[in-house]
Length: 473
Ligand code: BGC
Image 1 (cartoon, helix red, strand yellow):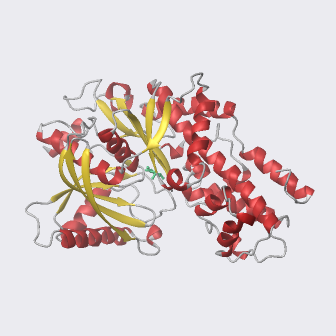
Image 2 (cartoon, helix red, strand yellow; image 1 turned 45 degrees about the vertical axis):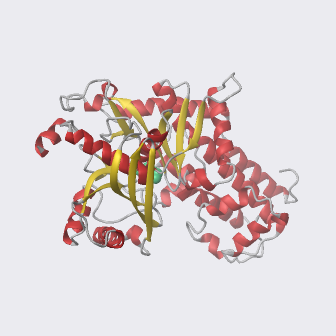
Image 3 (cartoon, helix red, strand yellow; image 1 turned 90 degrees about the horizontal axis):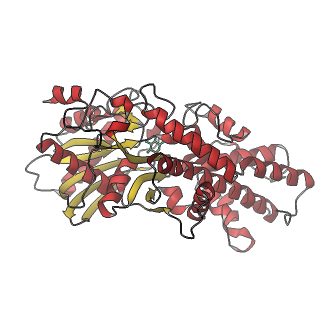
């Protein structure tokens, strides 16, 4: 940093921002300990900030599951429809099409969303099965938002996250909303399971790797899923059907993006507070708002805007676009952070997309700031992993991760691995808890979950609470 040729005032501000965004090993350890406590609280009868949703996936896949399934995944920019053939022997084949989400869908009405999904499925089935199907195709619906489930085939949306704000869905079960549209459009598809992307990731990766201990998403949003023992979930006591024993595994969708909504341990800066206050859901997803792909660019933008207001950066430039919330997605810090091009020309081109002409010195500052934002995100991100390992007493683990930040943000993997070392202070040379690349959770994972669900139902086993199971008999 000392090599930057900038004013003393700007130098001072950069140092302050660095100090605010730096997370020491000690702080990571404190956060992790509080995280463990919060995971426990989420499983308790009283509940806490972290929802800890039991998702009624009550078997580990063996890798021998077979069958043909449809899976859909409603992502940030498109709807992915996948036809999955599970071949057993840990093998599978997929065939997929992506349908671009219509402009403005994040804030549309519920009907528009479900009709779009219905139409996409109708097109997919017509294209891939021109002579029709003999029976409805079972579908695993990956819905990556906090949804409560008393049975695997329902999902009551607790609240939208990641900037979605579609009216008339919160508090509703999204499965009948979709099934109704499919029925109306005569699409021969039956929703058998509603799945969170993290649970899909957990199951898909366990299908191919028995050492998998959790499924994680570091993308537009952040979250993790793992298997708990039913006997360790006090909030479900008295609600299980008779086939469940204390040792039966239960996948838990933690929804830990809401960790520390009480603001007890996360080192929030004035920038985080501003982003939260200006978001559609202030006070929610506190952890996610500091680290996920949806917010990382925005964290950088508000920092830059602050320096611009102080007339310390981009002097005499037209920087109007930088006033616009969310104008920088995570590809901006991602390009700035580890830009190795001469004169930081890649960063210059990226800024041009916003209509900003930059001086080399400005770009050097931006690189520095992006590195602080990127490093903080990676370091904080692993607190969820460390907390699950501590809670379950895992000394070794493959933590299966997916998502745009994990995949594409430069340096994320290395920084995350270092943060795990900082938390655990291993004395051995090799890391024993490692983040590995996940299998396709919302395609293969959704299909395996659909297969596991059908198998349980065929055997007369439960896939929901006792009350729900008696009602559906
Ligand atoms: C959602 C989770 C999801 C995560 C990653 C969060 O905003 O609440 O359900 O797993 O994003 O996609």
